[in-house]
Length: 510
Image 1 (cartoon, one colour):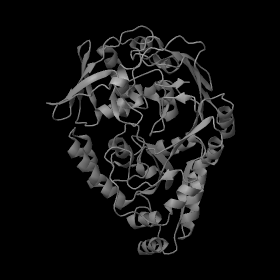
Image 2 (image 1 turned 90 degrees about the horizontal axis):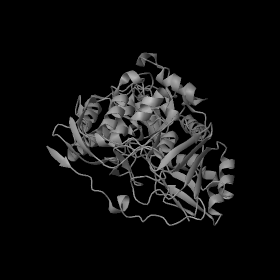
Image 3 (image 1 turned 90 degrees about the vertical axis):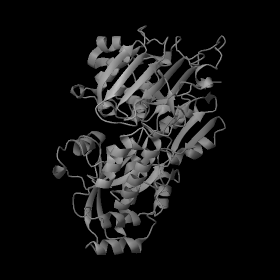
Image 4 (image 1 turned 120 degrees about the horizontal axis):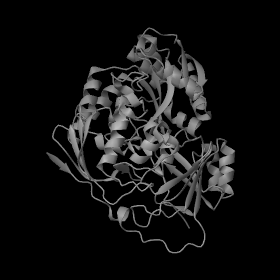
């Protein structure tokens, strides 16, 4: 049996002294681009709602500000040699906000609920491999898996695996998304259409935290209104900051710009089961026809970096590919001619109807017109796009030709950057392989990578997968956007992390 223990960082758990008497409440306001959809993390698909839930709920593991795995409600774990049985020692003396004790039975209740496909929870895939949860004693639980799964702890660190009070689950049932009760630093107060309010958990298990008394998350879709809130100190943090508004933040000596790399990949998925995209030469040609540096400048005002493999560079097990698709129109035209399309072809590309998506699609449209590819761009509302992609039961019924999209692997692991998107057994509606891409070498590598907890074996498997995916080019690999946000200089300990999520546990206002 392989043993692993995650050391507890002294500063994380023990170091901060209790705050002295406060003469005024510390109230933090965060300006958001969209409405929160639900506060049940097991049923959330969007990063914003995950961030909101993270203020109140926690899982066995989480991530620090650098997306490194850290222990939360689990103190340590062991895993057997086949990565089919994980045993966790749980943290003692932790209570939920309603006074219910945190223990192994609470974990079992939550994990059994998430893993049960009959519950139709959006994050069920995180624990789809779970066969049985066994309560060993009050603070020890064993998860038995139906097949090997080497990235289980990363899945458990995903916000979708955060844990509700079992009493709240029993009381509120399907309405738990409006009545979150966790073990986190803040407690639920209220949630209206555009505003979530939480307050300090005075009984939080980490000494000295939280330092903020109240947090308000407010949806402000209009970019100019969000920046105005920041400038007048009505909000102390806003995101995302549109690139064209960066100079406004930089010009204000009370404000600070956040500009950091992310793990948010941008790409165009091409339906590899339909002509002309069933020919890899066509897909490679389209990659050579896009000026990736110009893409970063035009779409993101330069606040973006290269996508030099199938996963971003900050994601675990990333391998930069040696043969990049450099901007080369002559090569693109030659490949199209070789594939039988010397004059190009016509196709449709769709994506979300937000400003940046439309800007990105129009850029791709313009670039590909240079090699005779005529694209019709179709912006769609999120619900319409979702129905079009995931309402299809069989690949042959899919209407997608090209989809402009993006992905953030919130487990911090290569598995979640590859398997949902490029595994040959992950076509919609099961997963998100909108390219309908299947390659036996890639499938075997992905399955090998997730079938072991051995780091070296996983690294080699994902190296093989990335190399083959890059060669096959089921996507146009566009770039990795930067995290852009604006904050008050009085705000500290508030993190905008690589997957686009927010961490407020250590936040303070000076």
